[in-house]
Length: 213
Image (cartoon, rainbow, N blue to C red):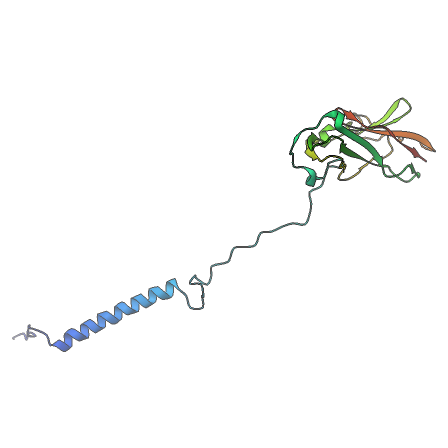
């Protein structure tokens, strides 16, 4: 039995052009596919549709809990030379002159630079001492049970007083360092007179008098 073989020889020009057309169309299809992958329809920026824009920064309106006697943070910029003690004037402040039996005194301070130029002072709670006395007896000290005291360098402009960010409430008890977590003795009232004095560093205010009814 004989086997027939296809003759081998030059192909017609139609065959060559058909092959070239097939290869060309295949190449075009590959290029189009790549373009569709890189630039997806519907994306005006030329980026993939699932690319997310950066999330906006999250801000909070809640302010950190301030130390009761802290100087306002917007006053802290620490520019200028150190204040001289002789140029600092402290004022001890109570919210009332006399308190009913159910009222607790709220204590604060004001500090003023009486010098001719701006100066810097550490007026943080680490430097503050509130003292309540009656006669020669000390009834209450803010440092007896103070926690987390901080430094705060404050720039004081000439003759511009800066006050406490929030008042310090006195619960009308006698303080001591060993009674911070226990019951304290209530101080005498019924028209008793007391005085508040404030110290910042080595500067002390004049006493401010008030009554407890």
